[in-house]
Image 1 (cartoon, rainbow, N blue to C red):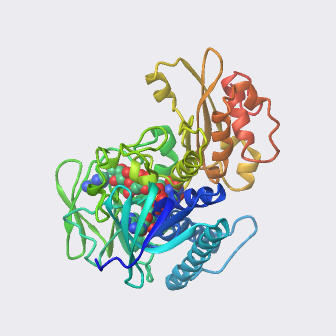
Image 2 (image 1 turned 90 degrees about the vertical axis):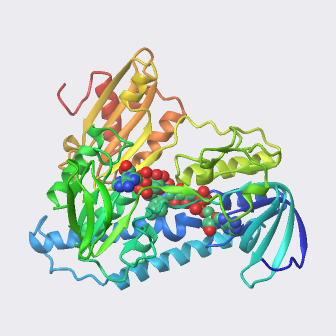
Image 3 (image 1 turned 135 degrees about the vertical axis):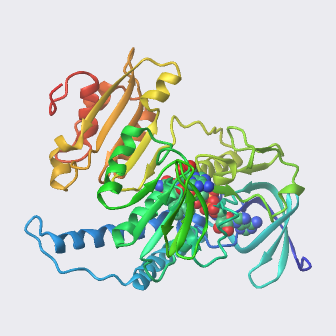
Length: 472
Ligand code: FAD
Ligand code: NAD
């Protein structure tokens, strides 16, 4: 590190410009605080540059490609089409354009709010002092009254499948491909593996999964993942469960199957998606005397660390490692720093997996509610019985909405859905939980016809024993 040339003081110093750090900076500046945000790697962090948005762009493009290919093969709805052609380089360039537009937008928002942004790498000397190495090589020292750590996470690397081998890729590599691989082995059938694996399968890659556990997407119950398993089966995607990836071979990936036998998958590329780990090294965390909780920075319900005046948010503080959780924590910390009384105490942190079909989970599943000592009733409504789902060619995938409520007072404890386009229902689900809705509130809310939201009202009616559009 070069010699520090300049010392600056600030009220709030935020390290990391991802979806946790940048909203914190915007809100703190809006509230009149003097803010410096230091980020190296691009405003928007993992989420905008190599995560949520680029992956959803590729997923959208892949679905469009698959739809056109399906019409070319078998005309449907009176629509026939020629066989689509894929220019992977152009797809990636389109995605990169979108990313540039959005990251530029974040820069504009920070500027408009009055936050100072430094493009550089921060390294702490002690809990309130850090040296920033700027993009031009210059260094500066910042002394802060309050520090917010939002350094995010990176992909976990398997030692026997190192990312420096060009055939082995992480999600970042998968989202930067300029040539569609003919074959791909995906290690890990979690969020990233399934979202990207399904997208590549739609684009025409022969995809095979190797998953260590005996099921895909272990966070969701089997009823929820069944429609995805069905899609994988009907689209010629191989899923090897209870299997361990071993090594790269000449033609692909070797693995140990569920019976302990050695097997091999043909793979031009191997996508390793076995989780993410917090960024806790390379920036002087060890000089800050902060308590840890396993690999994560330990925080309380105000995201305060064990060091007075130092806060931590986002992926750095643990599961769930989701953009919207980090954003909520960032906004809260900014308000605490401005003197507001806030606590991080959401009823639920909603989650969506953008698979085919999509999955939404908000609150407790029936099993989780029972394990928490609740006596529950549930209501399930299949999209196969919903006009709008059928009009959008959904419903045949086995999708449904399921509501879980406390039997005694009908308080909604959890809402889960699987089906085409259900991600867009997650806001209504989360709102219902946060507002303490009861089944009667959901059933009594007039839902627009025809929309997928009607399925939510019908699931509440089903839980109450009086559904209109399914026989019970
Ligand atoms: P990050 O976004 O990782 O940002 C941290 C930033 O800090 C980075 O820019 C980093 O370079 C910078 N930084 C770190 N240390 C320093 C330092 N010392 N000095 C300067 N800068 C530093 N989540 C969802 O909710 N929905 C999704 O659909 C979704 N899809 C995803 C798809 C993929 C492929 C991946 C990889 C992730 C996805 N995620 C999704 C997860 C989401 O991206 C993360 O939860 C989120 O980005 C975490 O935000 P953060 O601000 O905590 O950290
Ligand atoms: P994950 O934890 O979702 O899934 C990892 C999978 O890999 C698990 O099923 C695990 O059993 C398996 N695994 C672990 N080690 C293995 C091994 N050696 N061999 C075979 N399988 C192995 O992790 P991810 O998919 O890498 O995603 C990381 C995080 O990013 C997620 O937890 C989530 O927080 C975030 N993310 C969210 C979204 C979204 O919200 N839609 C999308 C992508 C990523």
